Image (cartoon, rainbow, N blue to C red):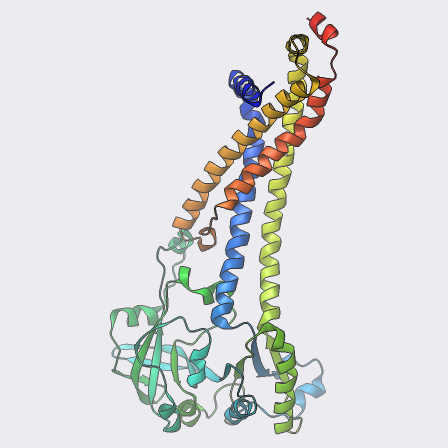
Length: 433
């Protein structure tokens, strides 16, 4: 029998038994929906992780001193210790000039006043190296330069959030608003004076962030609570150092962010940097060096575990659909024994009989796959339009792979029933009523 004839008869059989066919490929379509959803999420996460790493750096380290509460014994908590300093960061830069970034940071909260607006805000003191990694901003004005650092300039840069292209549904039930961002969105502070703590500063730049859907930094969320006002770190230490932060006002800094350039060099530089800093402090530093790569692996492992769970559910649904196809095909054989006998009598081979039932089952899988693709694409577009940014990256091969999985399921499910049909004796089949 020609394939075209098998396709025609298979399509007629499916059309004449609409309810049975619908129930058969319904489970297949559910499985395809789950597979499409999982593939989209997994691909999107991997793509956005890659983009985030390109911005944040593949070899990121955060060097901090251990807080006393992090120690495991009371003796360790009470011992005298040094803290990181700006001079430590400068020494690392001098000793390792090949590093793409050595960025010291000192941050804390204080009063921020602009016009009639006043609130407590998180302020960060940084150097020019801060902009070497994680830079996703459009600059209005300028960023802090070396002259600002050398002269302890009372200047600041404000980070303006990009908001959303389209707010997600959950935002409608989330009543909190960032009053600071609302104020700077409606007031042009460029070249204006603002009060930070007890001193006046000139706003020399506005860093406009991209919308959250397009900001790779927000996907991995590795940098924690980000300051929205930035000043030179030397100014921070001179005007805001006393009594601030974990160091008790002794001129220390919170952390040093380092980029080694490659993930493969992280461990090497981690040891070198620790030894250099310990040598500068005579072993009195209690360091906590965080490898962003390990943090990323942990975050992605949790996300992938959830996605693979959905993928397994999809595979189970397709398996259930395959079992349904096998069951229906077996039932169909016993209702078409005489038809099989006639076909065998007029020259159809056992291979022809097998092909007939296998093609019918593959058609069921194909139609179920198409239905699943249409439903899943509609759902994905709906989720994307409502702010679910992980759902925006559908690739051409995803529907193809899902339909192939559905067709393959139909093929495998029909092998045994088709083999049983081909074994029927034509004489006995013709006598069957």
